[in-house]
Length: 235
Image (cartoon, rainbow, N blue to C red; front, side, top):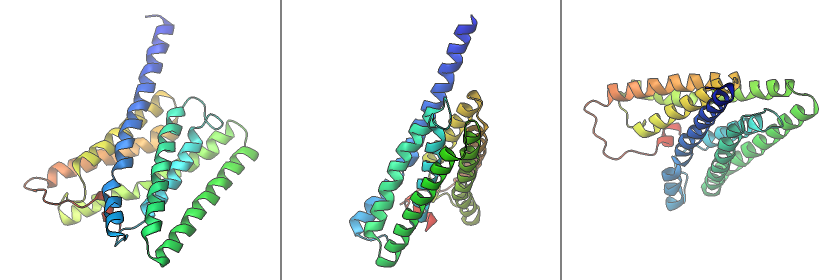
């Protein structure tokens, strides 16, 4: 095969990995919908926490900024997945805020304002202070820090499964989607020679494997009766 053919095949494989990551990420983005149906139906946020959606929104915005051509070249699929994710998380935050009591509503509004202010500062500094390739390094390190902080979520679930010896709060298909998404973007980062994408998603893939192993270990004899929405465990 010619060098041009190899390059074309390599490009197709890398883009396919990115598209797969987008598709698996979409499964995760829509997973909280049952939770918000319940919130809307009961016109109350009950004991649910809005913090995971605030964290997820901030993470999506930072990673979206990192994936834009003005910061990083050739990884536009990172921008697409995080733009969709940011819209979902913003919608969840708005719904949560609308149905929260006054104290929690003010807290959520304050946190939402804080997210946009910090993101605006990051964008301003990266554009006005840094030139390529230092701009990519600056935003890249921030995105890695943001992604690693998000790993507190699966770690919390893993800890809960081990403590309760139950997989009630770790649905199999969500764990599988998490693993496949992380694996896809790990491959995408490797193929694009971008450690800021491959390293955190490699860690995510390892955590995804751990979730699946724990699921199969603790699901023996477990009968699903009425599983609560996954994100209720963050409350």
